Image 1 (cartoon, rainbow, N blue to C red):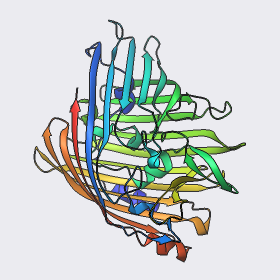
Image 2: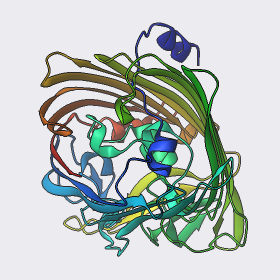
Image 3: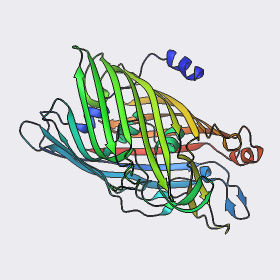
Image 4: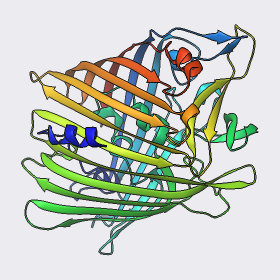
Length: 421
């Protein structure tokens, strides 16, 4: 924690956007119906080594997501089409629809094909002093999860966000105490839930504003059904923003401080387990240099990776593993900077660290990744991103696990993003 605070104090500039309002409302000048979408074609080369014991692959981190079958892939990782707008002349009813047809954890979690093409379907009512949003959409929470992926030059989520926040749902096939394994029962949560949200932006003065949101959800990700015996999770978010210059959607020049909290339960077999997540961070954007940073904590329902269950050397059959006990803990942070070298070229760097299962010495894992690269901006949001990640992982109290983690390797990624709107 001290290291993180010192890093924050060393920063001068950060990236900023009010995703709560951007995704939940429409401007009065917006079209009644706006067709939009984006695609991302991604090449990945994972340089890690493969380590097997009796035909069981111990190194899923050396293979490319989402299906963990190859070390080098070229895939259409995202292909999304949406429709958003307003349903009345007074802009009192806004709507947001988005679908997914790419290959990722939504449609193809570790090789188990899903039919979850609808990621967002919501209506926002703006008749009262507080906005009311109903449906399926991104829940209030982490800045990294809330951010629209087509605006980020970082191709992959941080390990922190991917493991702590990107929820997996399983059909339990085996358990060892409160450690559960199973195939995916549905898509990853995709930082989304179904429910009702109350939110608003309050202008404190000409240059300062306060945002808040409270959501009551289902805790079921993209499933749109009650899977937790009527134990709805609660989501809370608050942010203070100081405007510093131009207001331009996700490129608004401002300084923002935010915090969020999530508390819910998840059911595995016949038992209910707590899932608590919370975080703090800040953002700032001055028009040239952008930085984003956030610290997150988690308790209960800790995702601990994919496990191969097939002893056939030529065949990897993966299951997700979840450490469900309420006392299990994890935390971490990321810090990223982006600098416009020229009008077309942006240099980027990011460091992220994730400390998993900190309460159980033998299961504790520490992941440290440093990503560097650049973006070439073709036109508007359309661009080519190059990321190179130096990946390190540690098991500080388990030498056998460390021998496996030593097979981690650097990862090179190139991605083409094009946006239609």
